[in-house]
Structure formats: C-alpha cells, structure tokens
Length: 326
Image 1 (cartoon, rainbow, N blue to C red):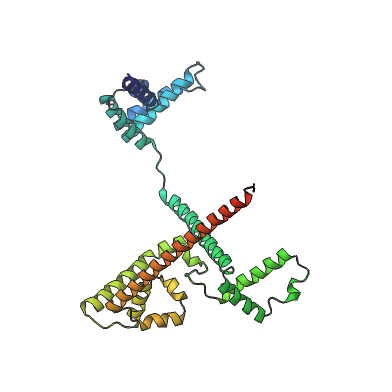
Image 2 (tube, rainbow, N blue to C red):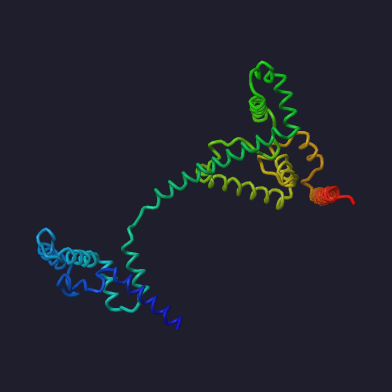
C-alpha cells in the first residue's frame, strides 16, 4: 500500500513537472497550426500571423494573454532545431519521463562562461588564504613573546636599545604599560629573533593564485632535481656533494625548506657531523629519534597521571576537611 502511494506521488510530481515543459499538455504544432513536417520558414510565418491576432494589445478577450503565452512557448520550442528535435522525441516516446527532463533542462539552461566565475573564486580563495597565513603568523608571534626564552632575549635587546625606558611608560595605566611592552617585544621578536618552526611573515608570493601560476615551474624544478639526483647517486653511484648532504640531512630531520632555514648553524653543523647521508648513520639517527619520542610520550603520560592523582588527593583532602567531627 505504501509502495503504491509512493508510486502515485512520484507520478503526480512527474506529471506536474511535465506540464511546465515545452507547451505542457498541449501540442506545439497544433498551437501554431502547422504540420510536424513544417519548415522553419512556415513556422515563422504561422507565428507572425497568430501573434498579430492574439497579442493582448490587439485582442481584448479574457484568455488572450494565456493563448499568447502558449503561442510564444510553442514558437520558442519549434524555432530552435535542438529543442524541436527533443520535442519530437517526446511526442514519439511520451513514457520516458526522466530522459525528457534531462533533454529539456539541458537545452533550456543558459550557457554560462565559467572563466569569470573561476577567476572570482580564485581571487576570493587567494584573499582568504593570505588572511589565514597572516592570522597564523600573528598567533605565532603572540605566543612567542610568552615563551621565556624569546621574551628574555627580546627584553635584553629592548633594554639595550632603550626601548623600555621608564619615560615611555610614564603616565600610563598598568594595562596600557603591559600592552605597550608586549608590542615592543613583539616587534623585536619579529624583526631580530629566529622563531623555530619555520613561521615566516606572509609575502604576496605566498598567495594561492601566484602559487598556482608558478605550479608548472615548481613541478619541473622538482622533477628535474629528483631525476638528476636518482641518476647521479643511484645509477652512477657518485659521492654525495654539499647539496646532496644538505638535502639528506634535512630529509632526516623531516623539516621543510623554510623550517630548515630557521635552524641554527650550530645545530646544522652537529647534524652534518653525523653524516646522515650514509644509510647506516641515517638508520641509527632514526632509531634514536624514535626512542626519544617514545620516552617523551612515557614522560608525558606519567606527568598526566601525576596531575590526575594530585587532583584526586586534593579532592579527597577537601572532602575529609568538610566531614564534621563527632
């Protein structure tokens, strides 16, 4: 029963949509008064004659407007070769509902040039991408001045340059003094200190549109580098040069080029001395890193457990304090 009702509902919906296609339940050829074999010239002639007769400005009958709309719909259907072929197919195959819907809406949907839409979308995405990078950069700077290592360094530089002179803060409230000090330290961290993690100030070359434009160039450089590297060191078995040593060391540390550029020279020298481009040394280094990460996870878990235990002890102590003595 439910299935039957569902079929009837679908049928009614299909019939309703069908009424809005072409000339609805009327025959377009009959509305124009022509045969199915009529030429385009005959269709145009029939339309002009009937349009003069049925136009609402000329015909004052109550249903003149409705008839004129039907006439226009019939003419628009038959004047175009594609829509006329689709309509003839509908007349010959009236039961294939969904195929008619597809044919009708495919031919009636206006053709839109997608290029301007793509350009606008690319511009919007590029702006959002840049704003996101700028927001991330600002968050990193705001977090950096809260880290003791960077704050102490920045404060020492500020005091040396006289940027934290008491005269500057004279007459300001405590909140204003703190905000001004953080602003000064933030500028120093941004301009004079290296923030680990590869966070760099966004440039116009970082926007999505420019990156997509340069994608073929970067792809060709990437492919050339790796093909040359494979042939030189895997096929020819040549000894690693400085570029290869630097690349292998960076890959071992799993850092991007930007992050690798932020690493101090002392740390780089220490890594170079380990000769990580040698497979045996690289394997040993990776084992050490994995072990260090394992110990770090264990340490963090123990710290979390200690904190949870401490909270439970405090809760227990507070509960006992609240129990009245008898």
